Amino acid sequence: MSVDEANFNFLKEISDAVSENISIQIKIIKNTASWDF
Image (tube, rainbow, N blue to C red; front, side, top):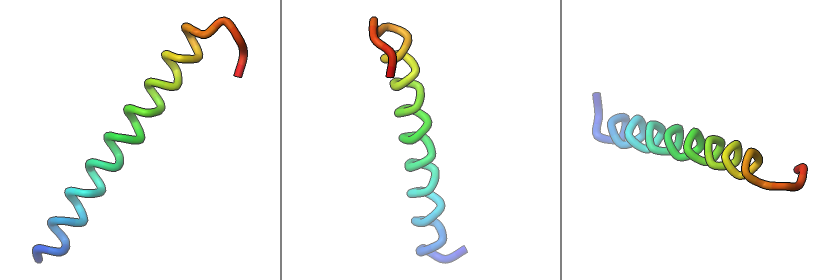
């Protein structure tokens, strides 16, 4: 595996984790908010 491939995989894992975290936070906000989105 080249350095570029390793960097790409690393960034992809980070972006996947970030997007998963954001969707969890949105669910929490929706659950705690008194209004509908």
